[in-house]
Length: 225
Image (cartoon, rainbow, N blue to C red; front, side, top):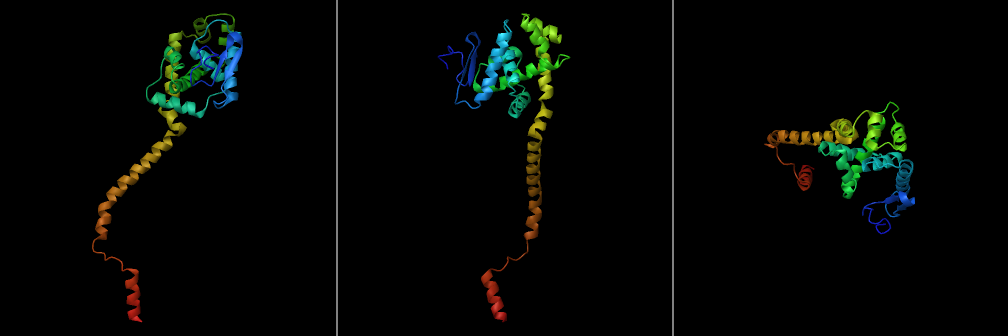
């Protein structure tokens, strides 16, 4: 794949689309081949309809969005990133998409949230108006401003705020963090209770004779008979 793609495919990549030759390459040993095919087909469809360049975050986010790749693990990863304060701006996201496998995995999820945010910001709740402008040849930044009323920089700030709001502590708790917090609280409560009860249990043991062994009980019963 590295040779056929001219070195453009990352080592961890499952597939790559080459719009100039209408070619898709997919690794058969990389998991969900059908899902990868949907993703790469979305790339080809977008590039075929739009001739003007688009940011990498939009290209990858749109392909993930069109392929229906959003899942629970993406939400958990983004929640953890928000809790760590690791929400990049969109320009940094472009670089992360070609970074290490772990960085790219998070970046793909974040790129998809940006595309979904673009759809939510239009009264139609869809990408259709933005895509229509791009199809007409309108530059991406101008199409973004005309479809959302925001410049690229304004949208970046608004998207970051939206990610922090949607995937902050409340989102983490909703996705299972609450059960973890409760489990830890129960464990701590049990440990504290056990330590508080230790002196009382020790005091109750004072003065109580040890129970007789089984052999002693048999001898005593025999003597009584």
